[in-house]
Length: 426
Image 1 (cartoon, rainbow, N blue to C red):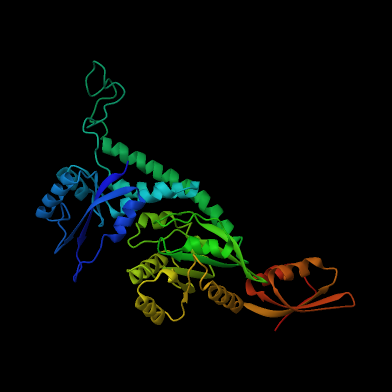
Image 2: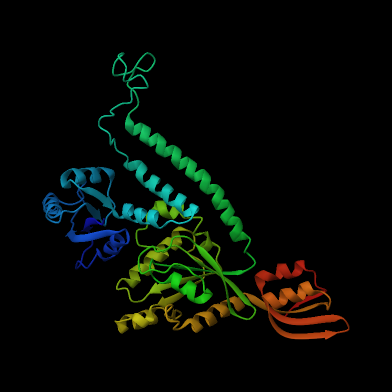
């Protein structure tokens, strides 16, 4: 059964109030909630106890009763004290934006790594928000607490006991430690996998959630990645081989989508998953040009990339969903501001030739022309060049093979390990 949700946004910025709850609406629906009302208030200042002013809280309580809401979701980050006070005044569950995103991630996680990452993020978010939920357990007396010796326990167990909140915190702390230890093992294996692909040209698809990254991956590599028109449809990184033209082999990775104000706990927990972006030779920033807040989305992605250490990575901007643009002026403005971007539609293949040619040009920019001499009987060298290089010319004479080819700079050590007779770089 869908939970009936009222969405709330406290707005501190100046200027006209737009639809600041559009993304929170999409997030709520993605979490399986039914939005029954939306509530925005311009704030001069944040109230320490309730975030909103007293009058607005009373109005919000009336709406909760009128619409029989089950939950109130704030588009702002709330402190534990504010959540407690709001719940006591509204008599329904209150959550904030970060908790909603964490909940969505929990329902989307499929692999063991992503499930552990989400659980760690949730616990690190929950830890400072723990409250004494059980009023009847003011203190834990001990095993003998129910005996005739008295409420405080039997011999050796009497005393103030341990507050339930302290027990909760200790249990959460232990679980966080266990999760970090388990994720460290998985992360090391993940990093070994990434480093094992160091000889290949790697691109990583990044972008705002629901921008079309998975669709682009499917179109380029014929992968079968889940594609849905909802936020955070996929969380797990998928890497596939892409051969845009003969002699060019590229690994393409799809990453979790970003949103503005992505909880720091998630960024930290998914750091190893995002290592694909850190170690990529090229980031392909997929941008939904149909979204009214496209510039804000681009800024949000750049902020997360900076946070994970990718600010200086080469980036190719790709304006996606060009076939669905209704405001032509918006696309023209973006193309003017970002003249080096490529405009495509990943869904119907529009402009993908330009993407391929642009990426291949970048690939060749890290390549060079070389002349390789080896024995005609040396099948390993010849097979390596046919698999990984663009052959320009071949000459066979007197048992010797001379091959002219364009090879990616990263693959040169692999060729040298095969020990051909001679390698000359032009």
